[in-house]
Image 1 (cartoon, each protein chain N blue to C red):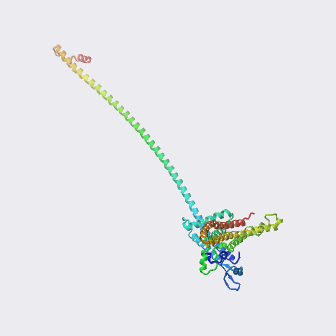
Image 2: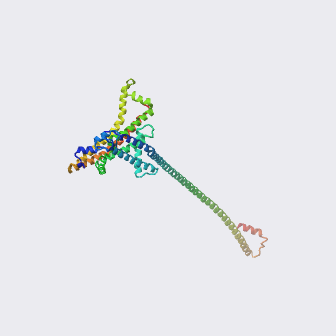
Image 3: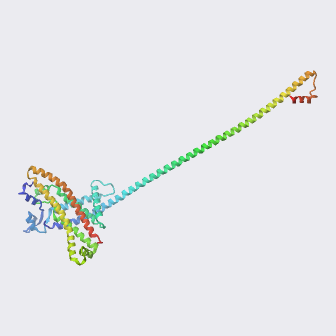
Length: 280
Length: 156
């Protein structure tokens, strides 16, 4: 399918461009065509494809789990109910294992993060061309179907988690306690500026690493899928070996997407646990 | 990596989803799971209790069976003893009875023997008298010689 592009680099670039809606340089509103127009739109534009798929997948998650929650009873569970309860118990175990305090927010937060990120990552396993090609038939110029390859999405989640970390740090330790943790920690009090720099970096590294780890893994995975997809246009020998490569990478990717969702969830729990610990 | 308002959109979506999950998904599922846990452990405890009850009942049954057997044995023993006693008593009384009958019979025989002897003696005295009459060829006055005759009879 790469045949309709001038060269492979254009193919790759096209697949890594979001469908952006915003204000053009001339003042009109619409979808951006190309990287230059995206740049002109600045901050107040929106990645329609990322938002659409992320909200859609989130709603799918909420719909499945809400249905199970409504049907929840003490009778023997069946089918989807069973799966949902298994997930709930898995998350509950993880939270109990890592989070020492008592907080009604942490477990639902972890559940949302795990399932939602898993679903977003799962989009990576759909062959790279299918949905964008269908969309192009409908006149949509760009479409990236994996929301977690968009840093806006991963940072949106990690910054929310970071806000929670700050909120609980201040709530549990008090503003003074939180400051003390940042200022007086690795070295004695008189080296406060150095402490502040060190602990500040540690603090800021939390959301950044959280977001970049997920984004980097999925972006790289997507990139490899795209590179493999290019092989399909290089004759039937390359095409067949590309098929095997795609299969192998997809199977390996099943592990990666689950692992990334799990890491994001576990680190969120651990960060919140650290924020809630009062005896430091 | 170009950041734009998607960041804000995703943040809002995230908050809404977590809120929804916290409000409508986690609590009912967790409650159901905990309730089922309680029910299952209750059921297991009940099964355990039932098992215990069964064992107790079986022990009781075997106990009372043993008791009943013992009692039956005792009753049989007593009955046997009693039977032996009755047999012994019967034997004793039979022997007594036999003795009594024997004694009575002996007495009867003695009596008859005596009577027969008396009768014979009388007979003999009559015959002797008749013989003596014959010898003397005259009539002997029985009354006059009664004492002689009696003496004779006594000698026979």
